[in-house]
Amino acid sequence: MNIEAIRKKYKKEWLLIAIDKMDKKRTVPLFGHILAHSPRRYEIDQRSMNYAKPALVVYSDDKFPKGYAAAF
Image (tube, rainbow, N blue to C red; front, side, top):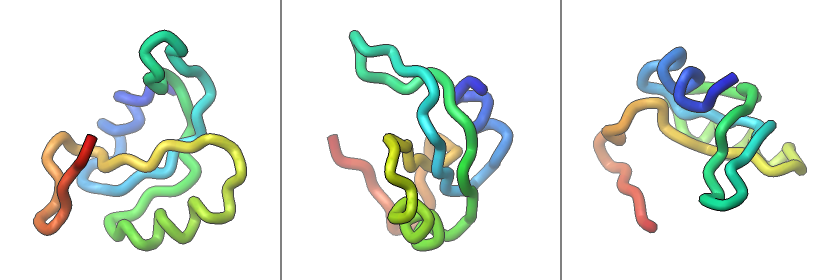
């Protein structure tokens, strides 16, 4: 499933997405499948520790919940 479609499906939740296809030139995940979703970030962190392959942890909305920020 397209990563953006997954994000739209799960509103205001943290997502753990297994990466199925990646744009290697831009290093951007394009397609994947959902492994876990939760409104609580720590639940996704716990699930991600048990997954050995590359995965994406992302918030579904463009604006983070209060108390979170992004760094690049």
